[in-house]
Image (cartoon, rainbow, N blue to C red):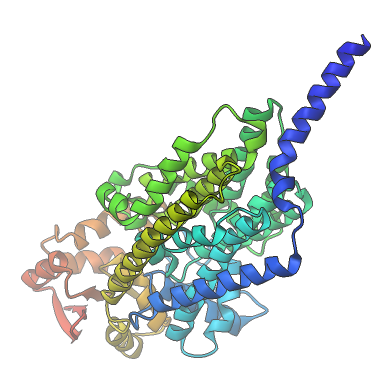
Length: 515
């Protein structure tokens, strides 16, 4: 009996020891000062890189960024009270139901609204993205992954779409930073901190369920490697999410908006022409512009030792995360901010675990030099491509003239029929006196009033021969603002004789329905 217990005890001790070997080996002999120094250097290098990309153009990067920076200034001006959002009264974001799903992000944007909003938005994006990259790099430093400065190259610039998207003044960059911290507290089993971090995530960004996905991935990792159930991280994140939703300035309306977002995520995009964020990238575009990350990812898959489980918890954990984000990115481009960094983490931790003890031999060093050269060349190409894409962004003042005319010549609070829902953020940025038919996402109008959306869609697609009377009857307005390249609507409007052009410039026109 004693021998049986001794054998079982030995197996348990061996399992626990091997399960912690990787983490303890990587964390031993850490110098806090050296850790801070390395992470600070990575942050500054990333910041310089993102500033270089950001200021390739004077335009704010990301259409929704115009809304974010303007709303942050409105929040600051009304503090400590929450301002009313009245700009989309026909949608699920009408004043009685409005929820600021990026509340903490907008609070963190406030310091950047004290001067020129355009410049503030362009400074915030590089800072937030550099924090995100430093958070991911911090994991490599904390667990003493070898050649971590080599991994910084593909981490920061292994994908051109990733660089472009991280240049947008949007919440995903800060959410990536939180996910980097989340990985650490999950692996270290700091569950009190995990509750608090999830709470913060809920207030920051509506994609907070991602941290629950991380907790579930960890539970799967433990099961695959140690054949035991461990739902502690999932319990902690669920508690944090529940607290963040209930202890919330927008409770209980935030639960309703979650329903609308779930509907947008799961519904077929063919039912309505949604924004590009809900469509995938072209496969060939993703493969060519993220070739370095794909190469590292598949090389790590080949190197990963699927038989060695208990000592490979972190690589297995990152394998699951990278696979989930790859599938999500191939379905919706809005998740592409997350796949490249976690694919690189998977490669870094996998190769670090599989590198033999003779890694200091000359042949390996020469291989590292060659790899550094290739990654350096890819980095330069991706940075140049991202700068070129940002240079092609439209003039940031494109909608200023039309917005100013409407603000001056129409009553405060009057509805304007915006023929292009994607133009709402710029219209809102320049003119908060008027309110608009739809914006931010077409599903907000579709979910609120589906029949009205159908009328709106037929009009903007140029399918109505006499849109003027229909606009006046269904929307109660006589003013329309449209981009000059909205040819389907403008051609129909011109042919109908229902409108007169009261303002026009190189970018947009304001039409008034004839009496």
